[in-house]
Image (tube, rainbow, N blue to C red; front, side, top):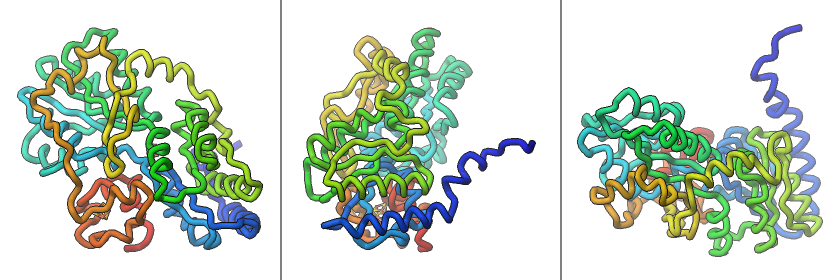
Amino acid sequence: MSELQLKDLYDGFRNPDTIRSLAKQIAREAEKLEAPLRIMEVCGGHTHTIMKYGLPQLLPDSISFIHGPGCPVCIMPKERIDHAIALAKMENTILVTLGDMIRVPGSKTSLAQERAAGYDIRPLYTPADALKIAKENPDKKVIFFAIGFETTTPMTTAVIKATVEQKIKNLFFHINHVLVPPAVDAIMADGKARINAFIGPSHVSVIAGAKIYQPIPLAYRTPVVVSGFEPVDVLQGILMTVRQQVQNRAELEIEYTRSVTMEGNTKAQKLIETYLQPRPHFRWRGIGDIERSALELRPEFAYLDAEKLFGDVLPNEPIDDHKLCICGTILKGLAKPMDCKVFGKACTPNTPLGSCMVSSEGACNAYYRYQGV
Ligand code: SF4
Ligand code: SF4
């Protein structure tokens, strides 16, 4: 018997015949719609799949996509990036963070530019490397600029736990972990985006449980389908939202039953609650201040909190985006990347003016890559 390859696990979920057949089923079902269906895919991972596989071209005109705020890099406001830069410039400091964050422009420069200027700024392949770097550099302060949605929070929390248990004295945390449901709620409460269904990210729900989305259908009579990231999963999720709409239902459903449950990973949830708590406010790029939409260290771990310990070097004022950048409007579902005057001209993945062009999950980046600009 031949060995199982990784591609054997996902090939079926990218199968062109299955994709075409699902698109046909959606088109048939969509004929029964009484009004156009505007689906927000909350997560940048879904935007990536939608653009990569040309799903809008496969679906009837009555179904359109609105790209949501689901990328932790895209929604980080400039002042938080300026925080990272200010921390990196402190004496005897190593600043560590995950991937794309390094390229996002702050108010004047990016971490990448500061690294080129000589500051010790290191990308992490995994959060656990922060611990390793701290142990290898006992004479330096190591500051972990931690970002992500519910998916990556347990990994950061595991590093905090190890720091506490192993009594590591030189590792500190600047926490920027944000929560998906309050942002979705803010967009719905605003009402301008006229969304009538959501595709929710599956990996967030693997950890937090699909239950986190339950308030949305209840409050706004809007279906939410938690879907996987492969094109067949996304299309199946769309079919489920169309059926709900046709049958006049507004429910929370799970398409990605391969890994998502209503309850999620309760062990990971407990770990997070031990070390982190909701912060009263967090400013999302483009969306603005949203109550209890991000996490911070609990007061008993304030001795690890870079924001509190080094608060005197951190800028406080909110900083607006580049005046030509409409990332904020895109993140609220009110515009598409093509609506931006500098898209693909002054702003490209190599010369990003805004965060949506930096991250591979950003809407502008996905349009640039897959629309042959
Ligand atoms: S972190 Fe997860 S939920 Fe957020 S954009 Fe990336 S893939 Fe989507
Ligand atoms: S193309 Fe660039 S400048 Fe325009 S909205 Fe996107 S990130 Fe901002």
